[in-house]
Length: 264
Image (tube, rainbow, N blue to C red; front, side, top):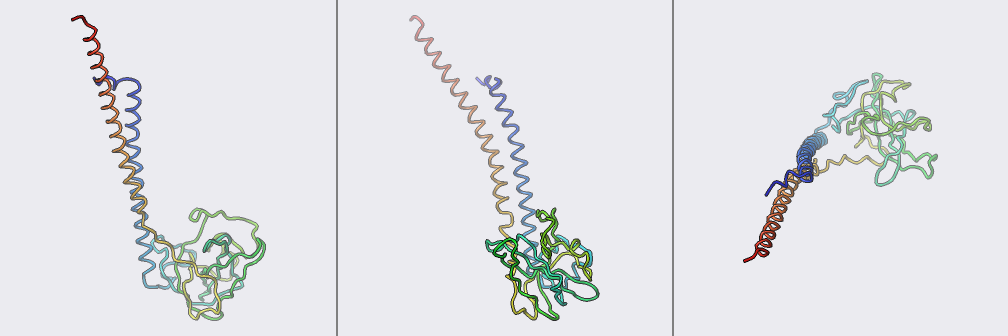
């Protein structure tokens, strides 16, 4: 009755099922891995945002880098803004509009400074028009913000462009921007949350990062891929049973026809 399983058509189906099962297993495991990574990243980001502030020099130094576990950690720095070396970061979207981040070095003394993203301003009326940028607060200030690692093409996915207007950049990378400055830059940069004393006017603050659901969608997709294994195996078994039932019914009809045709 089940010799049909050895026909060419059914052997091809067996191969497809045997290939699909491990593929779905691997896809499910990959989604579960992404769930664990994103959950850990979300937990770390939440903890860093809620942690008490520490001096920026406790987490990064001149020419250094910002570790992944310190990303979005709240830090403080005290110094004087240097508007002469202020930069505008192009193509930054906020509230559905394209604009610029305003990055101003904060000179902390001892020949050191840290780049501070003071916030976002809307782009001008034309591509060549400069945006209106509020001046930084004069004198000595203390800033509190989120520590961010340097932006590179590899980490941000942003393509660096040459020939930009003077004072405009694509990415915030202290290793590149520090050339020619009269002080040394700390690694990473600070995303301004508040400062004391406050400025008379300021760019729009950059929103906190969205922690999201912590990889919940990846967990759902992983379960879905593994459910597909049951669907594939169940469908394969159902097709076998149906084929066997059809062959059995066909054999019964042929037997009945033979008995009817035979003389009594």
